Length: 127
Image (tube, rainbow, N blue to C red; front, side, top):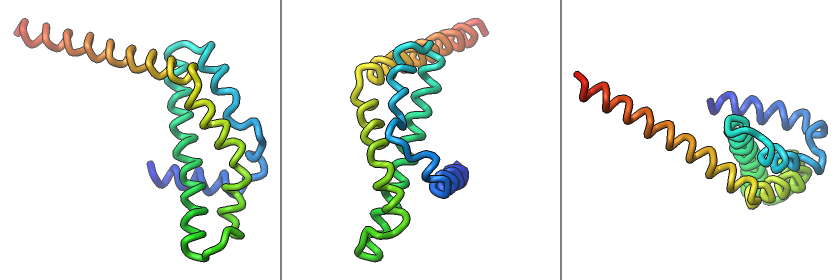
């Protein structure tokens, strides 16, 4: 999984200009407010992946700064280009849509686990 993430990060960094617009991640709140619970689950996974990706970009820049004591490298350039998108992502994380969707999805997962547990308990008692 980490290798796949690394490959995706490299591809996105190589194609950085194609992904460097200021509207990145802005559509998540609209999707969360209109989606079904299953769609919200998928969107929450996308947001989680986006957080990991952005963290990797920033971590690469920080590592470069530690090593070379400057911010002129390609990794830092990519990180600086992505700052508006990162701020958009932070806005999504602080939104009511994100919070309510997270609660809705987690409640559905908990309910499913409880039903599944009760079914296993009935099977065990029946035997």
